[in-house]
Image 1: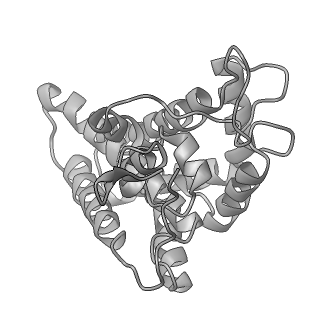
Image 2: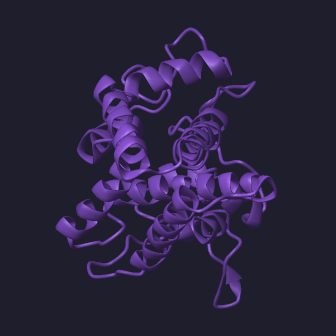
Length: 250
């Protein structure tokens, strides 16, 4: 089994997809917040905005592992912080601490992403997951921002609810479903990996659409220094499906 090497300091290739996601998120925010949206376009707008919100979090997730801008911690953490704030007013530092705790003790006591230890069903796990991460001051901050944008700036309130606040909620469900619940739920015969996770067996295009390849979760836990856009290659490499000098790399 071949293990992908960590990115070298100064490897800034991850800034390109990060820039694309941030730019599209910003442009789409302005479009849906100001412009009238027909019913025919509403569903498309929500789906696109949800996908871009998920991309914000995945970009921040790479920053938590230092792979967004290796060797440049201020740039790396700065972009990560912008992404978590734009996503839903989260603290990048707090999320990074919790995420590293998740990697240290996956699917067991001490893992902030795990269920309460007794109720592994989807909805009970989701409630426990949300209660650990959402803070009252985030809700208050979002409420204040909403009223400022609607009452003072004059943005249409239906647009705000539908296209600004609904997508991050749906993105959070997407991230939980494909990045936590499905990979970390206990298999019938128990986990066979020390990482207590599995990878979803999805084709690359579906893996991208569902959660930016975060469903290849065992690969992520095994090589957390690999950015999201290289996870399919890293997975093939670990499974011995990458040809190197005419033979399979294992």
